[in-house]
Length: 206
Image (cartoon, rainbow, N blue to C red; front, side, top):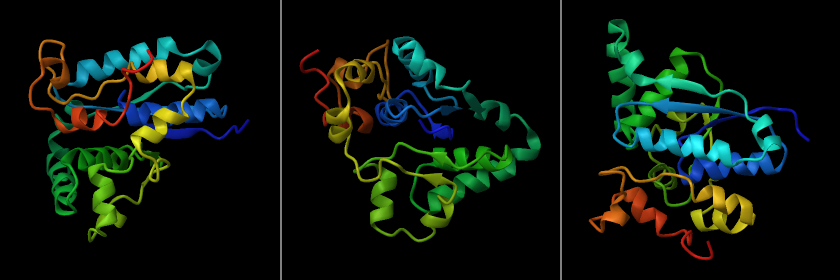
């Protein structure tokens, strides 16, 4: 069993949870980093994380160290940081990735955090930017690693044992929840994460 701790960005979504479960299956210790902001999906992601931890075996839970929370609202309230936060967000936009990556990178630098593993898979926005050799992207992402870079969501589902498939069903993806329901459940136009979730046969063989 490897004793080296893996530092991962964990949202409670499918990809980052699949990454965490892969480490646990190999007996690796994991330190989850949780990024919080004002997004409407935050309470649902938090509940997903709680349910996922509760569904793990005692042996698996012992491999997970207390999570490190990167709280954007707290950082944002510090006047001296305002300019720097905006600068990082602008940089993220300049390399064609979402501003949330700028916030994460800022918090990582401001708090002197180690390199983080991200659950980026084939077809994600950041993956497409890398495939297109977006100028400046490599240097911006230098403090992140991507263990799932060659994997699809379907690959991650297929490789998970039955018990971990049950845990993956507890994950949250929707970016536009309304009254505790996802876009798919409300049968409205799907947000991108809900659209991507169609790649995973989670409703089969429950």
